Length: 199
Image: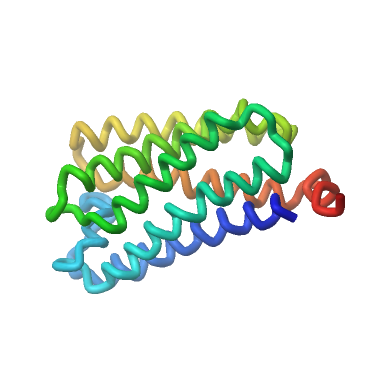
């Protein structure tokens, strides 16, 4: 049961984030996914739905690491400490992003964003080895490596402020949400997960 709850928390966080972002972006005149930073949507002075966006950041900051802990506990994964550490770093980063807004506490906000993005994508890569107890399929392992690598590569593009920086930043953020939703659906559909829930 703990695996199912952890997986559902990941789904709720991912869906909640994408919904909040869509609402906040639609309400901010002239906002462009390709060229504007995600954090702009969380600035109270600029974004009409900043509170909604910051709730989504905060929810991810809590639900991603809690979900990770539940999944690891429920599957009795023995070598998942690194995965859990990165998941917790992602959580700390998202909570900082939610509470210290860009343009106000710029340095601390950047630290939070870095922790969230690096922590989340590193958790994906660490999960390939750390969650072996789940007996993941080859497809799941390949997708996980591809997503984690892409996320970290896009972070470099963001740091260099390459053209269409909003796209680069989203490439480093969306990989995390896509992975947690993908992994959650994988866990929820596995017979092994149902067997664990019945024990």
